[in-house]
Length: 409
Ligand SMILES: *Cc1c(COP(=O)(O)O)cnc(C)c1O
Image (cartoon, rainbow, N blue to C red; front, side):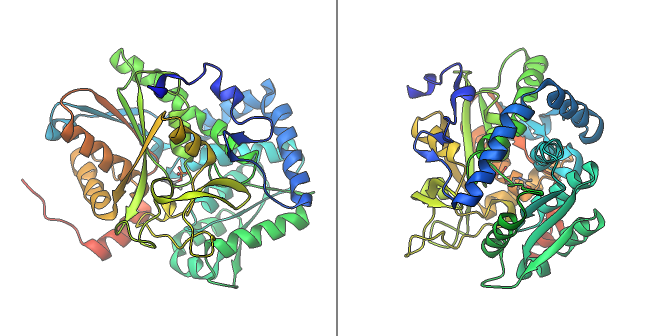
């Protein structure tokens, strides 16, 4: 099985010096921004690998973010399903309610060490914007968030959060006025301001060095989880499951277990309304190789080869590509990628809430749903779920669209 062939030094040798994970990744942007990316890469190797940076980030994770986040044994859910034991790594308890703050704090601390005054990003549903605004407030940095006007109208609570935290939310009024246009606008702003600012990508996406940097800042999830799980059970989990939008929470937890031959890894993509074009965002499952947003990856394309329109009930998962490292891990067979549709994610949302007292984010509910299906099929073993975030942000939408199911007693 190819699965056992992950080299012991894999994390240090992937990506290669040019930012490639196999044939995926790289840096496909214009010369000026390429220089800026090289500056960030250089700073990453010299600053982020220094003991001063590492110990400051460790202290912040403990004192501000509330890390380590615990692992919870989902005992009632497990018993309801059969004999398989389910566990959850609780990134919903990370400050601001999701894993995204892990890389935003790293990126913003790097910005500070580099002497930058400002962080710039785009946001779709606003989750990345909120996490980055949180980090910027903590470090006393200015924060410009570009957001499509349509998304601003849809995501009022997150827009308010960003503004309360002191960020500037800049509406993008051209084209479809959504995430794609916001990406362009943020890149354009960065091209003008790169001497004073740093661009902060919200997942293991974009040009080198971001897929590597974001993975390494999220690696803390996997390192903690491996040790905690072993402490709790005396073993490693048999299966680890995470949802994949861009793929940062998944890379975070997977990277802690890549060398453990017995631990099987599963990335869960959103199948939305079904497998028809435009109804889902399962890019690894249904996509093909192509270059988008500055890197080579597996993506969903429209008839012109451009990023396709995508859909998922979980706004954090509806991106037409995924991180380049996931593409490599799929090709070499180390990680299995599969899908969960909206309906199963909603059912898992309610089941976890009612059995365990944990309201998961809709994104995370995809991982929960997949673990539930596995548990129903398997006879024995353990499954560790990366519970990437909490579901408060999703409650109003779910109640409006699906109502609240009756209680079964
Ligand atoms: C943004 C988000 C995701 C998806 O992002 P990844 O980079 O794939 O991890 C998943 N869960 C939550 C709670 C999110 O906010």
